[in-house]
Amino acid sequence: MYPSPDVPIPGWGNGEGEWGGCRLVPRLRAADHTHMTLKIPPMRGRAPREGSPARHLGTTGPQPIRSIARVVAAGRVRDLGLILSDQARLVLTRRYDAFATDRAYASSPHGWLGPLGRAADLRVLRLPVHVALRERIDNVVGALDALVRVEAREADPVRVISAPCGLARDLMAAAVRLGPDVSAAWTGVDVDQRGDVLPEAVRRADRAHVPIQFVRGDVFDPQLRTQLAARAPFHIVNCIGMTAWIDRAETEDLTSLFRDLLAPGAWLLVDSWREAADGELGRALHLPANYYEGDDFAAILERRGFSVEARRSTSGGVNTLWIARRR
Ligand SMILES: C[S@@+](CC[C@H](N)C(=O)[O-])C[C@H]1O[C@@H](n2cnc3c(N)ncnc32)[C@H](O)[C@@H]1O
Image (cartoon, rainbow, N blue to C red; front, side, top):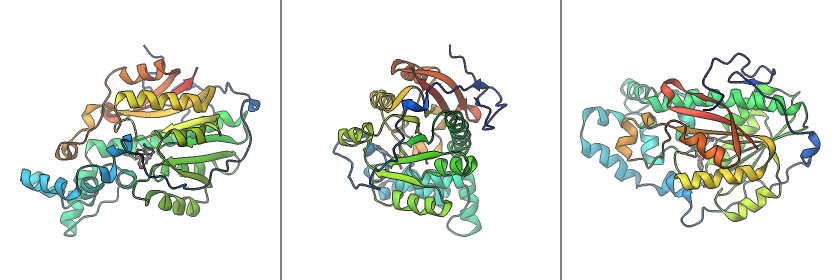
């Protein structure tokens, strides 16, 4: 149905304007974008509004102690072993928030009781969900690199917004890979419920010498949406690690927001998960995740004003990165 099945990637991030075997041609003229420097005050503090989909993440989930108790109560030796793993405890206490996700990206095993904890952590970091996270970030960085290069032929700077950005590892890796000759303006938005994600992202961006404007806010908050709309259009919206935590209606709504932030021909990068991802940790946690099979996700993108240009899945099709263009 869609013209972009998974194929080997010949021109992956090589500046040739190819992604997933598709040629990517800039359709926007530079004049279509405003060239102002973003002046969003960094990290405006807004707590998530009552009833926000942000409730799916972090501290608003079940109590950490209760989560751990559930694993202990289940009493299976394999599950008990999970608790020695730093990654398992992080996910049990913070779910897949920015830190747990980023620790899966970094994949450096540690845990309680020295070698035992390390072995348990290694096992957890090798679960399909974590392998998929690592493959996903490679896919995202490669796609950002390719798309920014394509847009840079016409735009200066190429304006990229990542929502939710978490610790923004993908933006930093892409910026470093693009180097100083490609001009890009990076914006990261995150609700940062505990107030510890964006300060850490700022520290990392400083260390990497990548200027990123961080905005603290809930993407479902009309006030934040108005603020972002005032700074549209962007050339690229990057939405990674969100759609599994919100329901389909919310994903449709978010996709419409992204359409409104982009000019015709501009790009949306967004990922979706298949049920295969829900392994031991997911079952122990009863994670309220939303999965997509077949062309379900593509249908949402098409319905909300995008054409799917390419997609790339991780091993076993656990996670799919979609590259879509605003019609
Ligand atoms: C799984 S992390 C992914 C972050 C990042 N894109 C990455 O790949 O590392 C999900 C992030 O979504 C943020 N988040 C959740 N709900 C949000 C909302 N309604 N508005 C803005 N950010 C939200 C969380 O704070 C968290 O940092």
